[in-house]
Each structure stands twice: as C-alpha cells, then as structure tokens.
Image (cartoon, rainbow, N blue to C red; front, side, top):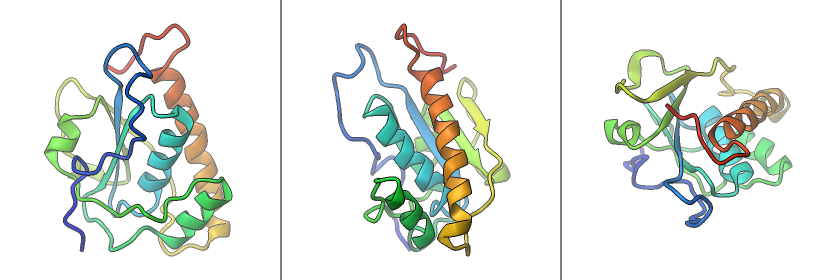
Length: 160
C-alpha cells in the first residue's frame, strides 16, 4: 500500500500566473482513491488548464488506480496511468477550499468554513470500461459546473 498523502503530491500542472490571486483548491475524496476521485481530479486538472489546484485522496486507498478508469480517461485523451491512490489526511482537507466527497461517508474530516459537496456517483470498482464510461461522463459534467462556479467569467469565485 502507498504511503503518499494527498498534500505530498498535488495533481496540478503548476501554472502559477493563471489567476491574479490565490488559486482555488479542490480535494476529491472517495474510499479507495482509485476511480471516481482520480477521474474527477484528472478532468479538473485538464479542463481548468491549471487554474485550480487539485488534490485527490481516499480513506482506504487501493493499491492502484482502477484499470477501467484509466482506459475510460485515455479515451478522453487524458492519461492517468502515473497516478497512485493517496491516503486522506486532515491536512489535505484543511488546505482545500472545496472538498468533494464521493461515497466516503463520515470518514472525511469536517472543518468549518470549507465548502463541502457530496457527489452521489456509482462506484466503478470491479466494472469494465463500458460501465465506467457513463460514470466518467457524469463526472465530466459536474467538473464543468464546478469550474464555472470557481472560475466565473468576471474573475471572482464563490468557493465559500
């Protein structure tokens, strides 16, 4: 099992001058950090073009990212083969403006002042790529909505 933590390996492309102020940060959390949260983090990284800091983690991280999730994202031109599941830490939650949970229930620490969203999504564990595609597509739609809320046209954000 990996000992990496979410705050050790932010999934961001490092574009430092995209926003005049601090970049908003989003943490995606699911139980195994192997499917839903990995796809969400990859989409947010890709679609925000580095304007949002992205973390993902799991309360009980798997050994590897779900191969069907990797294949489904590859179809979108996004390579997540190098990603590894990471353990959820209170520090990662504290460092994030928005915490998106995906089936981790009460295992995610709560800190006042953070924006929390619970996305009810089917778990892709044990499913083939055909079954993962609709989950991937629903995640993409939610990510597009999240980006529009965090990076509105006028440059002000609604993270809190």
